Image 1 (cartoon, helix red, strand yellow):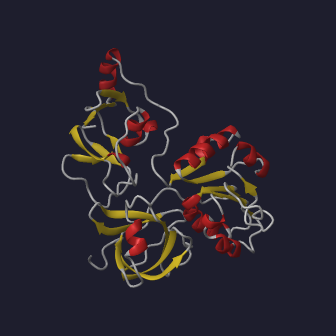
Image 2: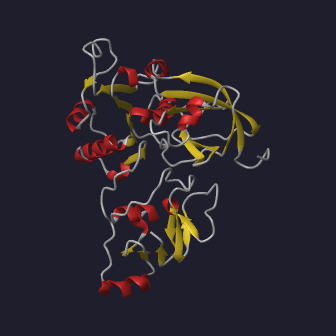
Image 3: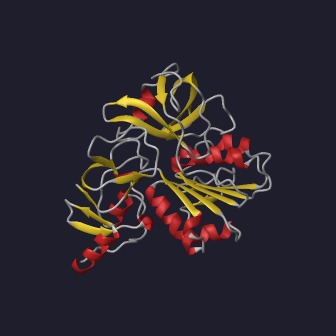
Amino acid sequence: MTEGTSGTMLLEVVARVRESSNVVSLHLKVVEGTFQPFIAGQYLPLRLNLPMRPLATYTISSDPGDHSGYRISVKLDPTGKGGSHFLHSQAPVGTRIAAEQPRGRFVLPDDHRPVLLLTGGIGITPALSMLSVLARQPGRPAYFIHACRNADEHTFAAEITDMLKHAPHIKVVVAYAEACPDDISHGRCQIVGLLDRAALRKMLPLDHYHVLLCGPDGFMSAMRHALVGLGMQGQDIHQESFGGTLPIPAVHSPKINASQHADAARAGIVVRFQKSGKDVIWDSANGSLLELAEAHGLTPAFECRAGICGTCMCRIMHGTVTYTEDLIDSPKAGHVFMCCAVPDGPITLDV
């Protein structure tokens, strides 16, 4: 890495903290390049140079106001995929890792509306950064609701208690799916069992919230359904998936039949998925090419959904695209990263 290259840094692990049996936090300081500020909720792309994962992303769990470095908190993936095994077992203090500038759109909105942080499991990591900011905004009501399996998997409980001891405007509620008899009496959790619409209705006053939703897929799907059922608008629910495919709630564009094809082609919005034999209409409401494919029942491989890992790369057989993210690495010639690309006009993909 060349020192001083815009947005690039060389980081060193200066401390490791075991948060639970399967989560470790790494504290990283910049030793080459310049510290790049971040917004609460953004992630840090790391160049791990592993055979199957040269670049991986991890949410920054530290305070954006602390410019001494970054903290990432990593859950060990039991399948051994990705970079979590390397960071857990092969990144002791002193390890140096190249990194790109922080990025990501799942961020704390910069206004004065009330906030609901709703997290499950390791989805707590962006909330840690967001809570540090909200604690300094006493005029902004906030609710932090966290769900996990039990006390053994309830990471960062003491840190959050200490962070919010002078922030009475932030209400914290914890739900354990598998609680011990004394968890409630000792204040470790306030709800036993799974969160649902009824539980959310009891604890949340009516208001116009920014909702920041983060966690595993099943949790995300259930919570979004519950929130919409309580009258919250879809555009106010911002979400980040920690644990696989994010369910697509609706199909926004119909499949093109033969009589529609000519008109759609003239409008410049036909996307052909060659291998699957599907021609569909695209418009700006459809999101990326990956989201369009998923909405029509296709399951292209992906991981980061941010144009970083390259997992969703496919061949363009015809047409061109525009990228909605600043790419760190370009796809190879004649290919496209589906997760952050939109078509410039009619396009054919080898999918």
